[in-house]
Image 1 (cartoon, rainbow, N blue to C red):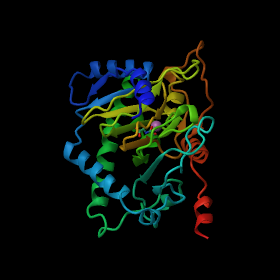
Image 2 (image 1 turned 90 degrees about the vertical axis):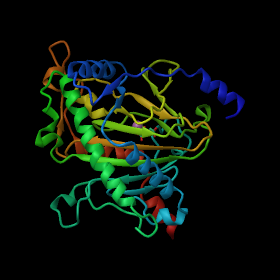
Image 3 (image 1 turned 180 degrees about the horizontal axis):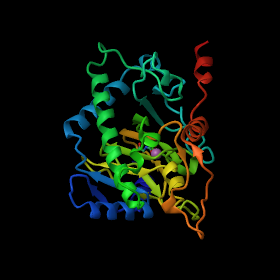
Image 4 (image 1 turned 135 degrees about the vertical axis):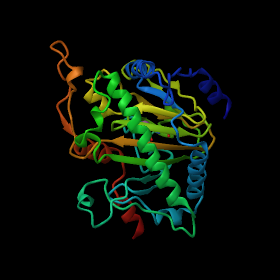
Length: 336
Ligand code: OGA
Ligand code: NI
């Protein structure tokens, strides 16, 4: 880090986030801590979530192995139209208004394995995954599949606490039409060791809110994630979310903001590179394709009518993915 950036980083405060302990039997306390966090920043830590430290470390190690392959190898697994596979540097632009180039990160998308002969394969985001070969990266697929399934369980437990915090039955989101066949997306991320420069529009990840229901995020110990609780303030005030070993950072996405009529927050966040390489693992939980996201009965009143029209999950996702990812034709043109 050079002098100017060290000063800038030092001037950014750290956000004090609540910790929700999933092993606690004091459910009312967990609900209260989570509710406070959802009203305030939409960000909190989840601790004692039950995913072993060994598995977490194995996912990071396998992620490093993948991103360490030559670009030509990674490009063989380039993301397809189902959003599975490798996303190269600059593939995504999260904040078109302020970025002069795409995000300074590469990624890898892994979803639920939906075989070609399953009728659900017609749906966007559903299909077979792309996998690096077992000879090049032994146990890679196995590691990611185990983590994907365990992260989905954790996300569903968090969704139950969210339901209680919204004065709904704990299993409200477990309904077949909401999380019966959800779209759970694991995304490995690798940020190059670049120093971001917001004044020049250069970011690890541009400012954005997440698209869906909720996100679990595991990061290595390199700081970089920042949140902005009031996006309309001028100038915007940013706070660091510090990594917490073994915990997930959890944040709410736009669909939950719509469901809750903006009572729960889908907060703007971004990644600022400090010159160190950084790895993170994001797990996005989105509901069923046909789930209609509309204002919850507990979140509206005469004084607070619904702020948004109902929207289908798949319509919302298609819009947001389309707005933020490069057209695949860009890569086809590069091939010729
Ligand atoms: C994201 C995201 C933050 C990080 O992928 O949506 O906000 O720390 N990632 O990688
Ligand atoms: Ni995000």
